Image 1 (cartoon, rainbow, N blue to C red):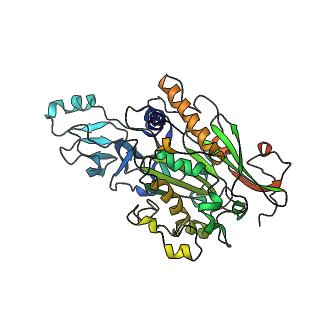
Image 2: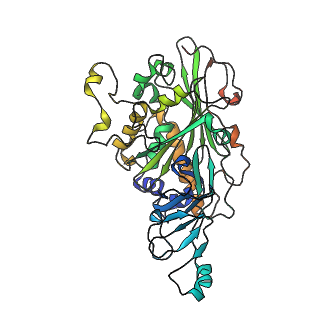
Image 3: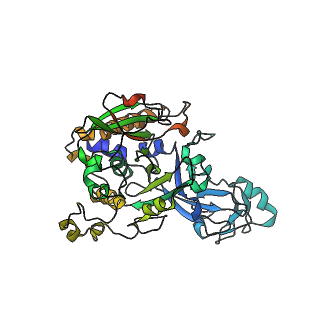
Length: 418
């Protein structure tokens, strides 16, 4: 259980907030790369309580600025996008993709060049990788090293990226991602049958034990489910600071990374990256990722409201045997996140052993945000990390195997999962 003050410290992310300043020190996905077209409409992006604009210039480069024009703060989402620049429709100020003001036609001709040179536009480093546009909003110059995750190195055909806008604070969305105990309960309907996303072994033991190993970038965690035949269903998750969770998938299925990027204190974007390290991703599995959702890869959650529509819950389906009555695995997670309120009141919780990983994460981030406020570097910075080697692992193994000895890039052959 957290105090109200601790909960506020973790959840508030706006400009000047302690957690907001910490999160700004990390690269984060801002929008799907496919959402931007060369010379197309600029896109408004809201992150950490601030508004920005992203656009793809004529030559394909991406620009990322504060939304307001530096002249009178008119939204640059309304701007003309041409000639590798945005031109504000109010007074014609033109800002090239690098953030340099190149034209100020509202000024007298003899002083335009000198005046333009004095104008500063807040623009931000960006990288395109893994089907997303990533941005760094922090103060470090140069920006810290980019997350060279495995999926960020792959050809486009090997992966897909999808997002959902949720009316929930980033922390409670992440805590659902970190929670392995709900797998065999909340998602029990989806564990049955040939199309199950994970093994029904999660339902065979709904009270796993947890073990954790700290790393330079966050931690590695194992949810261990002992089974009746003496084997163990092992799910090893990786958490990369501040909120990147590599989630175990059964052998043969696409690898998975999810992260909740804060829009502001009350809203977040739940990102999902699915990928196959070795070959083009199976179109059938990619299509299954959208089943039961809006089908809009830019916002899978756009078709359902919150309490007004109860996230599409069907009580007749529940009577017929569907545990939740909610139409997709993703919506089950989103309903749980949103139903707690935009910011969950953690002072009212009664936590148990199944919450040990969530508790560890909260403590880790409380320590990090307090240390950062005192001038200490953000966790994971200043250390060499091979992000491309990070993978989650799932296997059924002999009880004698120590999960800490498993190489995620070359795990032992799993015993039959079914």
